[in-house]
Image 1 (cartoon, rainbow, N blue to C red):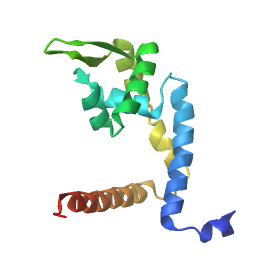
Image 2 (cartoon, rainbow, N blue to C red):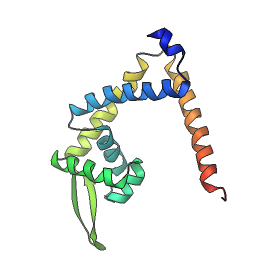
Image 3 (cartoon, rainbow, N blue to C red):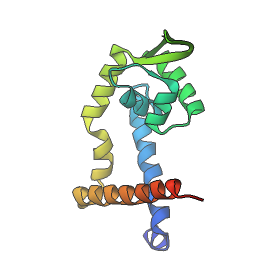
Image 4 (tube, one colour):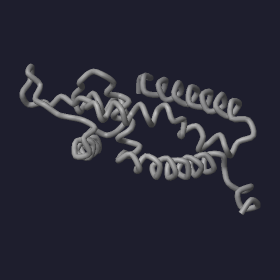
Length: 149
C-alpha cells in the first residue's frame, strides 16, 4: 500500500486521511448518540438559543442538512426547539443540560486529537501546517469571493 500512496497527490492524501479520521471520530461520537454534524451544532449553540439558519452558518452545514441534524439531536435529548417570540415562523434551538454535559464530555476527552496524534511523529508541527494551509486557502477563497467579476 505504501508504494501506491507515493503516487497520490497531496490533496488526495489529505482528503483520504480526513475521511479515515472522520470515520473513527463518528464511531466514537456514536457512543454518545452524536454525529460529527451534531457535535458541531452543539459547539455552535453554546449557552444561547439560535435559529436553524444561524446554526447552519456557524457550523458550516447546509441549512437543509441542519434540519435533519436537529431532528436527531432533539430525539436524543441534546436540544430543544421552541417558537421565536419575535417571529413565530422560526424556531429557536437551545442545548439541554444533557446536551451541554455530552458536549463537554466529548470536548474534554481529547479524543479528536488522540485519533490523529497517535499516528504522527510531530503532532504540533502537523497542527501548525494544517492551520497555515487552512488560513492560506481560506484567505484565497475569501479573496476570490470578494473580487469583482
